[in-house]
Length: 168
Image (tube, rainbow, N blue to C red; front, side):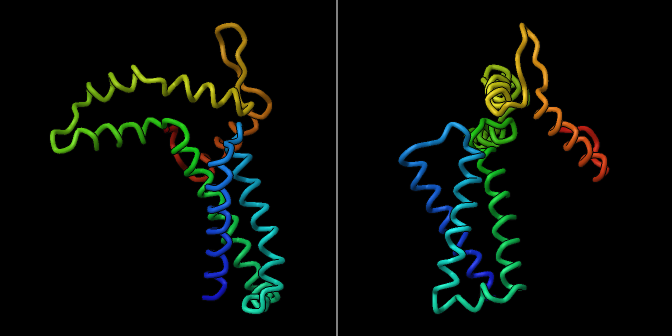
């Protein structure tokens, strides 16, 4: 149980560092920035835990140290993935927000479709893919970069491995 509280403390510290840094300056590449914040917080937090009289014994035990490390990595990556959903205007999040704003009246399918088509969702996703180096534009067409091909193969392999159909 103490390793859970220690791991939660590290994650909380990383989250607070993230909030403070983002209030001062938002990096152009949020994913890389978040990876750096959570990674550096972990690396700085370990010596603090080691020299702290209350928690030094946790870090010294390999099994507990491994639990803390795995927990930190998993929660960090989950948060980074969640943040990217909030950062960009995802179609799913847009639908939920629109239907929520409609309240008890609800929203017809045609209204949702028209609002999604009128929005900048597609443009923002293409821009984010280009900014991330996954896609490049040549003339009126878009092509995958080598980085984009790598991730496309990775996602296709994971879909196949998990037995998932093509979806969104």
